[in-house]
Length: 159
Image 1 (cartoon, one colour):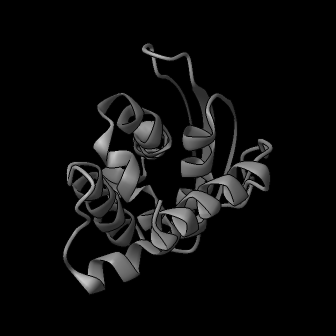
Image 2 (cartoon, rainbow, N blue to C red):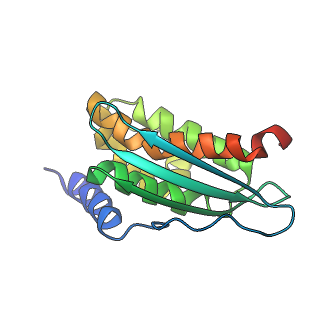
């Protein structure tokens, strides 16, 4: 195993052990904020995540909280995603979602674009995961929950 692969595995293990945003928070009662919740299950392995999102009237993600169970890849991916999208506007969230999906389609080759990989930060640790189709669904579970919760909040209709 190369040093780079070891570093990537460590990032995933660190996020799985010390997840960002874990623990559902009640929907914000701040006037004008939109809140949405989604529960997603990966039927192939049983990983689950329930995710809540709070969106400001200006269209920025004010907060993400989640609860889930499953493999370290699914739990770490939700944690990394939470770190990436909190504070981001909806256009940036959509861009990051697209980049992460592109990464998951790369079959382990990465994006080949330093700016895109910089934007993904710790999420590039999942480059190796993209070599294993069964694990890609684990890594995308949280992103699916985020998109669904944003849609349920009504924030996508106003942006």
